[in-house]
Length: 385
Length: 166
Image (cartoon, rainbow over all chains, first blue to last red; front, side, top):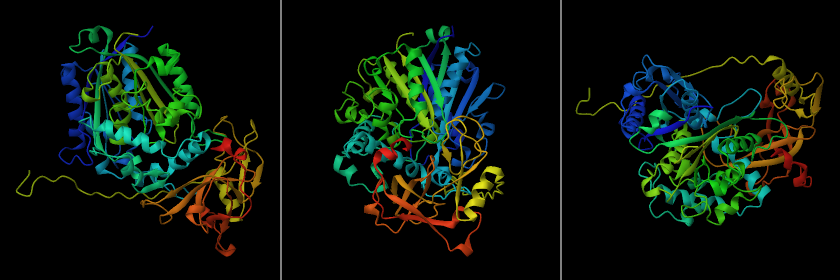
């Protein structure tokens, strides 16, 4: 039996288009210090540091872990870097949790980030290979045909994506850390925003953000002594598959379904929609909400859009999705997955402020990355598992 | 130190990377085919599915593809697409344009390319398309030989014929 692990400290930065007031090290330190403060701990209480960010080419800085070690209190301590493309924030949380669950460390600090203002991720994603042509134009160009496949297969109404974007943009207004804040945003405003990668509109797309997120994870004994109620880790799961293979379902990939099944089995969940109170799901383009409702088995095949359409995923619905405003409102790429995990933990600790879902006791955090091929998820609860 | 002009907030430090790409056996086979105006692929020995271009192994079964080479058509079905309207560095075409996924006849893996000679509002899933090649005397061992795809004018392929490739 593995050790229990609890989230005892959570910190995030204000996510903005350009945080020119801090260096990369300063940005990470801001999130980490907030997590330590939340846990009422100091740097010396940390046994190991786990960090994660998106591929180096996104910021043009190779092996940033080397120059960040001191800023993160990592000197003379074990420090690990995790790589799983866009899902890396989630995987970083899972690696940190596994170090505690395996009984190797008592307190682990995990930090994930991206400083997109120092980089050009779209350039880094539009790469040319000798046997193909560069036509995808960033992540949106890659995912738009998959979204079109989903719409065709499910018969979802064309405005489903607009509804998701409207909900998440309204939720973001309740989250002081969220990057994109559009007061009085309307359905028409989103509908009339320019098509960037048809069928994805400008306001159905995530922003480019600078930001970081950090968490302190503790063993059961230390978590019980924490000043604030911990979020207990009930289950974690990771799955991946190749980007391309003949007959691959790119819309709802098998790795997503396998990941969901593994996660629920570990957490003893048989009816996720009923047993989970709130979920933070990685939705960088609006249509991925209905897609992941199916990919995470909240809805039957081809019916994920009905949850959005019926308002089930709204703050006051039966399955609130992304009360924080989600990736659509803040996208410091490497941090985005850890933010989903942290927001889930904030919900079950009753810490989410204006975007708190009343009575949330069990929450799910989700991240995906690459060509919809990497998945990291966890379930946290107010009660011990 | 900051003076009256304020702190230095950001400095541009461009980095340039030039790669020498060693094609290896699998990509060489594909590119040599393209040099002759053909799309060559290989079969996965486990499920018999045809990969174009094969990278030398079946990602699904983890075994070498082949050993035989399979020639597939330069016609196929447009299985999905996006109209790209946003500019980006590195793009090989000027927006707006139709970025398409094509399932070549005889292949089970798809490739991304550009559709041209077709109004953007007429682009649709299931459209039959064909590769447009540079004049033969300009062919090299490169995908640059195919400038774009264009509609063939044949009736659309039924959704069932490609739905398992989305």
